[in-house]
Image (cartoon, rainbow, N blue to C red):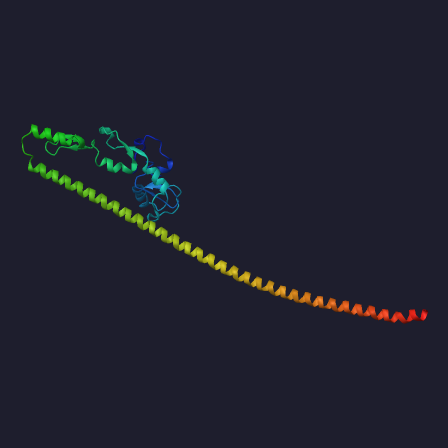
Length: 256
């Protein structure tokens, strides 16, 4: 489940809301179709249906990835109220630092290990002093044991939470690496196809250039032949003109 929108004072962009629970994204992930979900929401959804809840495109858990950086930045910068608001905390912190604040919030409700009175984290030290002054009785061993058991339970819960988040981060990194590998394979395949097409185009262009060179040589040879024939014709015409002139010369002498 996400963060209740009522905990945010400013209006939250619709793109930062889970498409399933419609709250502000918590441990956000994104599908290839760009729709965003809380990790817990989409994981529960995919147990029943292997499709995107919004557009019904096929969707597998292995295809989920981290939000785009600009969306992560917008999400992390949202100002959210502490969950202990009803207990007196008036802090509003960036969503990115919420866990850090709440883990040490002075308004967090706590119970005195000696008298079992309800107090808060910020008042616990003062209460223990008062409790110690007012009661001289030693804390029963059973209460100490119960307190230790509670601490062990909290530590175990924290450890489990840490291991879960670590596993989720590892899964996220694996998914991102797989996606990058698939992208690189597709890119390599695309480049190979482009290279083959360029080779085919180069071969065609080389063949066309060879044909053009051959045609140019043929045309040049034809032009040379035509020029030679023209020169020969001109020479023949010149010789014919001289012969006619020589033949007409005796006739002119006779006339004289």
